[in-house]
Image (cartoon, rainbow, N blue to C red; front, side, top):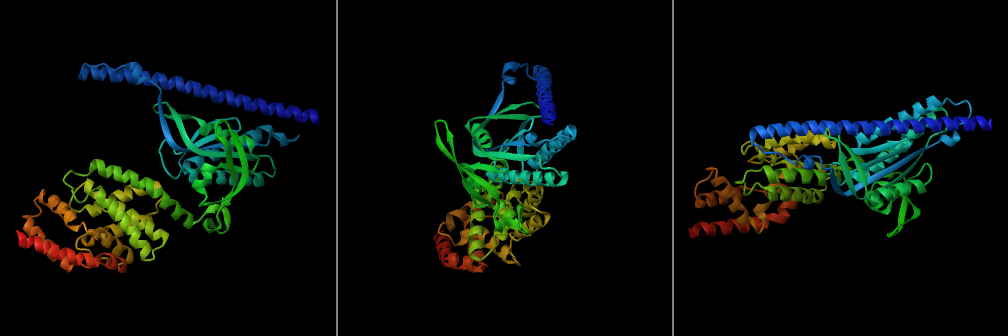
Length: 465
């Protein structure tokens, strides 16, 4: 019996080695093919340049290895354990197929959470969040994926009727350098202390445990129940504290399932993710807004996003409502990148195209678009969220910098021949502000007094002309 078990283990080990060798050979052939394809593409580009400009690019420069540095990536190392428990009578080929299925499922999970699989060698699995698209949410996404990996493996054990496969997982967040290979099918290889530490955490952990470093813990502790696990000696860095992830916090669990996130989790996650969305949209506005937009510029968008959050919390809005408000504030003037008139509807179109990539539901997007459309002039809000964004959009009317801000709006309109003289503008301002009222109690208490003072200041300017 013992001898038969040893033979079975040897056969499985041999199959794993063969699988590893085949994977390495495939990767090598793929790299050679990509190099040849790149040379062919370079040659075509050279011919084109010779025809158009007579300019020959440096082929060595074109073939130089490309690498990127990421300040915050989250690296996961996982190792599937179970070969030592294989007993006589088990079908080794079936077990290998089962292992392949498990790894395939892990790949699907990585795609779901925007995590990049780096490589699989035998029963070891390595992936990283925050690569190639930098984002602030990658620690949460990677830990959530790890929880889902454990959950799936538990289902495999129950379904198969045997207790073979177990996982050891180590996760660490920090800077990495990514070497990029391939042109049509891009692959990434990462290196640095972050990779080494994640690997060591996996190897020093226990089966069934998800170990995270203190760096990762600080970034995910708001969402997950974690227990202190111990310290890992790290060369030149001292001892690194580690924590074991037990599951989602109770308030974020769907029907008490520690592995299933509920709507509260999704909202909290999106509020953090909003930072990434905001960075992308503001960068787009910075590059694409016309130069004559002296008022409807990036600063105005940031002001509105800030104000809807401030007024929203003060008016007792929920987390989900604040998320809708901030997102609407971010997109409410984005349509100016396409056209000045009707920019609200154009902003809605941009939101409908962009937000599904970040997990916003159709219902959320339609609510956001309704909030955006409430900023059309003259404002006629019908709900609390519409009233909040209208007040945020015209917040400057009651601020101490009202006159210099309104002057930028005059300059913007004047350059488009939408307004006449400065005196005419000031008369229009007095009429508009005198008839304007803030819709929320918060805005009235914060801005109404100053707004009346601005009316007197503008009247004085008119009299001086």
